[in-house]
Length: 256
Ligand SMILES: [Zn+2]
Image (cartoon, rainbow, N blue to C red):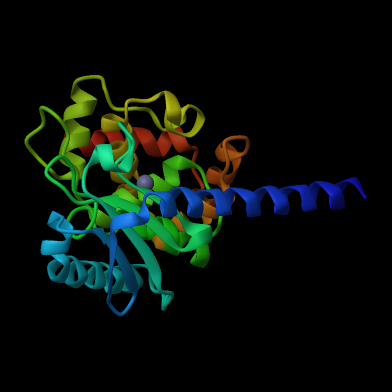
């Protein structure tokens, strides 16, 4: 009985929070103009850079949609809502530059002079991947895996004071500087890490795992491994302790 009540409280809470998200976007929505492509409905600000570049954004996002399906071996075909803010200020966030709401099939992004998180190669798969993985893989995972998957798919990162945009090259530099987050830190204290280190580090480690052991194993890890069972699930899937594979990975980076 208690489980049932808890379940309904959760359902109610989930419903309320979804309504709140829609309300908060709608409140900012007085000047949204709507554009549609095969898999997206875009909402952009009147006269914004995004509105000027809407055809290019549509083309790049449709390309990203196809690429994501191909690389993950899927036939995902749901239409998504994309809100495109003009700037970080318009988005109302100082740190974040995008957000996915998988349960709503909705993405919030920025396309302006201070940030672009939609419609550009190197970022066009990121928020999209959070939505697709939610429906096609699992609704819940750890940040190491969701951000690792997203950054691996874009296969690109711009880190301050590092000229390369190659994930392994960036991680090699971070490792040399003693700034590469360990796998253990990424699984146990993601929110404490500097995002300019954790995101490319997660993307590069994901890339290494998929390259060495394939996508199916990574998908299992994504769906089954949680902070509390990470060590044992990792061992079940890869047949080695995570720190053993991390040592091999670090020597791969040193020689990269
Ligand atoms: Zn993300």
